[in-house]
Amino acid sequence: MTKAYITKYALTRGIYIAEGELKNDGELFVQRRDREYNFEQFFKKKEFQLTEEEALARADKMRSVQLKKLAKEYQKLSELEFTIKA
Image 1: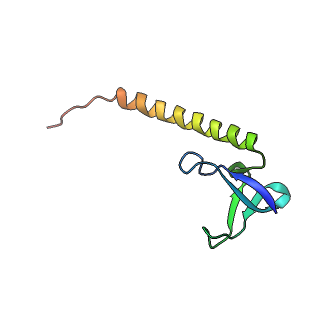
Image 2 (image 1 turned 45 degrees about the vertical axis):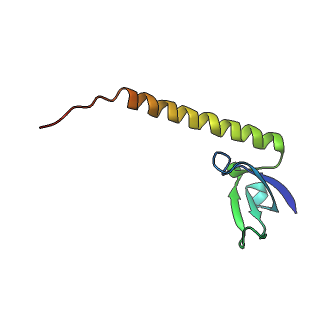
């Protein structure tokens, strides 16, 4: 069994540790069944990391990308002008 840090849900549920197997030369992580999940879960390479440092770096990058998206959306909404159409 391999331990992996799942970062797919880092911005919503946080990073969690899972045990499973690496497949396809490390491109896929298959989380084994446990009490919380009654089925196997599959994660692509960007969705899991093998070290704590990599997981924290990935979550930090995900956060900065999301903040940039939100800043852009905020700017767009701030510049929005409303008019009443008759």
